[in-house]
View 1 (cartoon, rainbow, N blue to C red):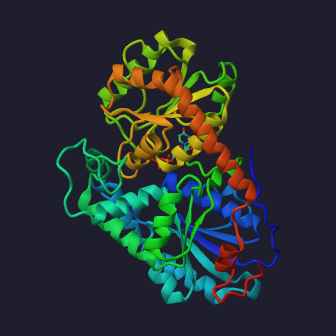
View 2: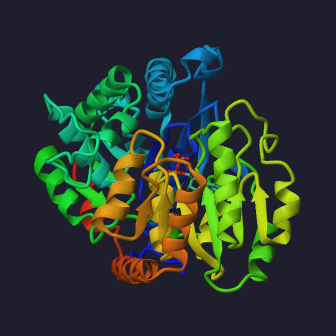
View 3: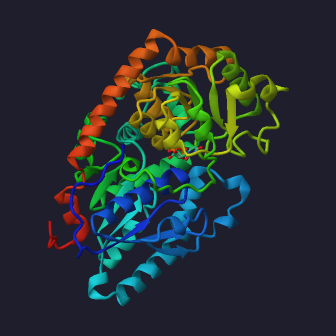
Length: 452
Ligand code: UDP
C-alpha cells in the first residue's frame, strides 16, 4: 500500500533547493523526498548535473535547473566512485553557487528559498550554504548502520589479520568485508572524511530508513553527530507511482509474473553500478538454472565486464530455460518486489534495494560487491536475520544451495516470518506520519518562524 504524509499541506511554505548526486541510487531517494516535501506545501527546485539528468516530465510540479558538471571530461581510466565524487564536488561548486546567488537576488517574498537539501556526498555545498547564509540539510542515502560501521572502521588503527575475524566494534562485520567495502582506501577514505565533517557542520540529516529498523545506529549517530537526525524512510512507500529511473523499464514483465505461483520466483538484480566478471555471470546462470525455480533476472547492459549484454551466457542457456526464466535490461523493481509471485531477491545489497525488499517482506540472498554493500548484507544476515550471504562468491553449487535455503528450506520460512514482522513495524511507523514539526520548522525558516 501507499502512505500519505499525515500533515496537511500549508499553502505558504517556502522553496527548498535540492541537489542530488547524479547516480541512480542517489537520485531516486532525493526525488522521492522532494515529492514528500512538496506534499507538505513546500515549493521545490531541483538542481541537477547534465550527467544523468532526471526526466523532468515525471515531475511537472518541480522547477529544474541544470548545471554544467564537465563529467564527460573524466578519463575512462579514472571512473572510480571516489574520483567521480571528488570531481563533481570540484566542478559543480561554482555553477551551484552562482545559480543560488542569482536565485536569492531575484526572489519574490513568497518565493523565498528557506534551505537547501544536498546529497551527503556533495560535501562542498556546505561552504556555499555558510557563505550565502542558507541552512543546509543533508540527505544521506546510505543506511544508518553503514555510517556507524564505517565511522568505526575509519577510527580503527589496527585491523585483525584473519579475514573471517569479526570487527569487534561492529560484530556482524568481518575483516574481509572491510577490504571488499573499500577497494580504493585512499580515495574513498578522503571522500568519507569530507562527507562526515560537512555533515556535522550541517543543520540536520535526513535518512531513508525507519527508526524501528536501525534504532541502535540512530542513537549512536545522534550522540556522535550532535545535529538533528530525521528517519523519514522508506521514501518510496509514500508515492509508489513516481520513479526517478534513469533507464527505461521493461514493464511487460509484470504480466509474466502474474502467470507464476505465489512466492515462486527468484528475482535477481545487482543495481545500477556493480559489475561482475564473465565467469561469475556464467556461474550465476548455471546456479539459477540448477535450482529449477522460475527466475526474473535483470542483466543491466554493461554489468558483465567486456560484454554488451548477454553474449557470455552459457550456450543454449535461454533455450534450455524456456519460459521458466526471464532476462530483462531493467524493470520496475519496487513493483516486482511487491508482486505476490516474488519469493526471494538475490541482490548486491545497495541500500535502496535492501530497503525495498524489506518493505515487501522478501528475504534476500546477498552478493555484496563494494562500498556500503558488505555492511548492509551483514545487517541483513547477521542482525535482522532475513537473508543469507554468498560467502564464497559466485559458484554454481553455492548459489543453488543459498537460493534453496531461502526459497524452500525451514530456514527460509523463519526469515520470511522475521522480515514480515519488520515490515509490519515499518507500516505502523509510516501510518504515524513521519514529517514532524521539528523538521518542518528547520526546512521552513532558519529563524524559527515556521507555521507548524
Ligand atoms: N532498480 C530498478 N530496476 C532494476 C534494478 C534496480 O528500478 O531493474 C532500482 C532499484 O529499485 C533501486 C535502484 O535501482 O531503487 C538501485 O539502488 P541501490 O541503492 O539498490 O543500488 P545502486 O544502484 O546504488 O548500486
